[in-house]
Length: 67
Picture 1 (cartoon, helix red, strand yellow):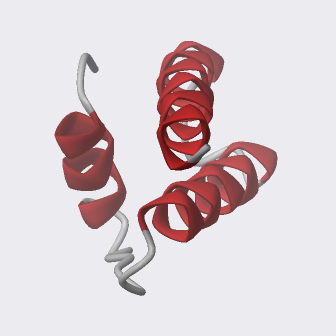
Picture 2: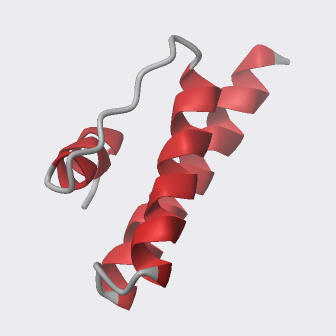
Picture 3: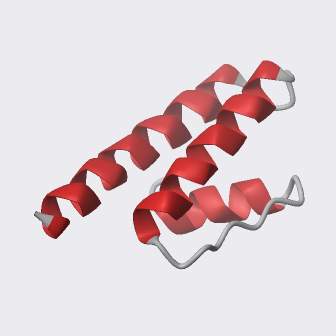
């Protein structure tokens, strides 16, 4: 996974599509969904870590843009 689009496509494999219209809220919901999938042992730790790192980095960039 290299982009947010990749994370979205990854989550789509589990039937999860997230769009509420607020970019940061979307990213945070994706993070929550990833945590749930990982806790349920439906995804590997490596996939979880990669996606989480990408999401958190993008969230930080989006928040900096708003300021």
